[in-house]
Image (cartoon, rainbow, N blue to C red; front, top):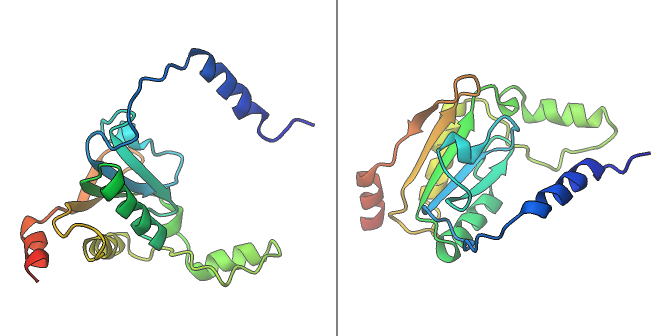
Length: 177
């Protein structure tokens, strides 16, 4: 029987043979944090014309702004050079095709009671992006003028269509309030 990680560890051994540490620091070189979905069709750096070291990439199911995402954005902002945040959902997302009840039912069919978990499925992707951006913008541990925007990546065309633009007047009003 083959070890479950043999393929990736073998590939890593080959990778390490030619690996060269370029001395790049662990900060976001272009000041960007990107929150996107864990969908394997998405290559965040390529999608946005970025290179290794340009951005902090956060991924989870549905590109949702969770408590852990907010915690990570605070760390990224104050320790790792993040000065702007882009949330990128995508078309054909499994989180938009199920409800939490659907997911619980499927998990329960495998003998596991997952009812204590909130999966944060998405009924309306655009409205969810608006709400999640507002959650970031109103998080008191992030700078009040932090640029935050959101879009939807089309997995068939590669294009990101903006849903929530950075609004300088909104950020200034938040700072004044």
